[in-house]
Length: 471
Image (cartoon, rainbow, N blue to C red; front, side, top):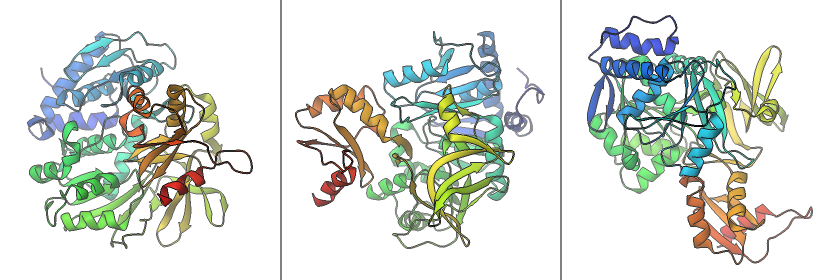
């Protein structure tokens, strides 16, 4: 089947992929599971698949769920949904069935696409919010105990991709690493950053994701986005050796606090590499600020998150002692939360003709380096790059344990749960694995006969944390 001409109804970001298929058809677009897919083949397969989706009723703004590991067909699936004008909804590669069902139902997805090419009708389709622009709907942890969907349009994504490419150009034919689950927004940086530039997207298999340094070395990966915990785990596994990543030229770091130790470990493995710290919530389309790291800071120092892209405004609200909540406005700010009007009213606001998002992140302004991340104003945390609302963990634990006394804290980068004495912890942990993604399940459970209380009759979480330090 001949390629179609650049279609007027295709989004410009998707049109770039079509142009690569026309102008450099033999260039490699995807390296996955030992096979290579050219841009011409990727586009042909996705275009044909999009036609099948439309024959099955997918129209502009319809949601289509995607499940399974990151096999070649999954990348065809997500591109096909966007060509058809739809919104793809990743269900999570390792999410338990109950959570996948919750996400599919909440999104109103009408079809489910699997990694083997299967198309399954779902009984969850709704007629609400029709004729939305194409994009993706990512579900993050929710403080109410239920995951919440963040709706990001292709316009939002194009703004982000263009900002990155403008400041840190990626050459056609370069090899870009792909590690992230499609339900993690780092995946859109990897996928569309590469395809927009005509680069090759090189996928580390889901089952071997902790072995990413070996894949990077064997494939000659030149650029990637890494979460600091991935770097530390690779170091602990003795996979990051001096000079072991000679091809690596650009690494973006994000989703967690970046320390000097992480930068130093990567610099030793990839001495010719340059590093960029990225900051931003899913609602801001991957990253809203950037900081090129020109010098390796001391191990204990956190790396500043830098300055906003030129077409965005990032400000500090309600600042006290030079520390305030980061609020942001600009073309990357997402459409909003899916079917959550109260959350939208709380987190988004209009000012001076601009639409701002309250990020919940606290920072201080340093004229020499931009913004420096300080912490959170709520109980949201990042574990291995995943955004987690501790309240969602606690609600699930309390429900399954049959007790109102269960509290989760973070210690040494791990979730620790204090739960009332008398609960069968083995049974509780097994039940949680059927209810929550692995990254949301506490690594330790500690039975407590009585909980310390504050003067206001609330459980004293600081005292609970202190017991971990004393142990």
